[in-house]
Length: 362
DNA sequence: AACTCGGGGAA
DNA sequence: TTCCCAGAGTT
Image (cartoon, rainbow, N blue to C red; front, top):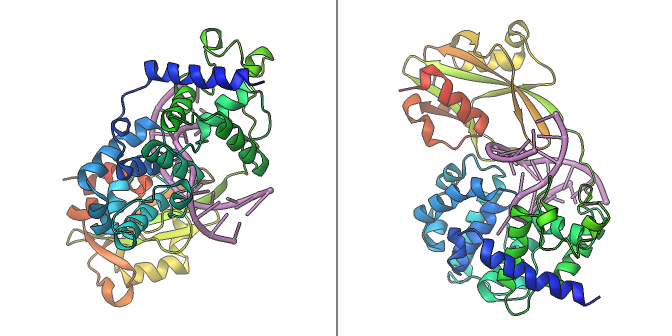
């Protein structure tokens, strides 16, 4: 029973050294760069995160630069990447490291775990890659590889599954070069032991793989199905003044898109017709304050924006106004010159509208 | 233990 | 369409 872990460990690293991709964070052990890359790559494919990593490192070469930046600027740079709390935690932790730790990163798994936005995976990744600490990482790739090779059908998204896979990975991790082992197990899952139709016939592990022997490759890893998605109906009021200005407001409180900007929003339980919208008190108050003269529907067919747990059925309403003064009546709303609208961090739903709406062009 | 938090790519 | 990605924080 000692044979399989040894075989797995040795061959995995050999495979990695031949097949690994050259990625920018693989040519450094600077904890700032590694930390930044790991935060960006949480629940994010390498191809999607890579340009963001390059832009962040160019804009903020050191943790001091990041700490000194405004949250607005960081969120704008993060725009489109999703899971925006990562950006806010990134900023918070940068300031913490500069202000409280004299700009020096913690060097152990245990200490790294105390940083906001750094959980078990990220603490293990930084500790192993930067400081050679044998802390095993378990991400989506590792769950897949280990569940198949070792034939483990415990659901991965349960307390028991998380514990079991972490223990197995910890048992397997190379004590002498944990950083390379960790990256190898993830790379193998991402590039070879893929979710759908992996090429098992040519796999270096097909002689020891439990799932291959028992034809369970298609059913492992086991994952408990998630809850159903919630439907929401968004009506954005895009105000246009004669002075070429519009109104944006910043989302606050809990929920999606915290701190990002959007047009004034009227949310309802069901889809709204023109006649239903204009008799709503919420709409009447808004249009009165903003001196709305005329309103028309921009998108005839609903725009469906899909998030993990929500489907947003969206309509944009174009409201023409002959001028407004938001400071007095709506302190939470911001008057924005249309020419400067791209300065604001907005959700992709809003960005898509801005880039296709003719009035906003040029 | 269950929920929430984005967006995009692949099949 | 469905699945899932170099997960973490909150309830």
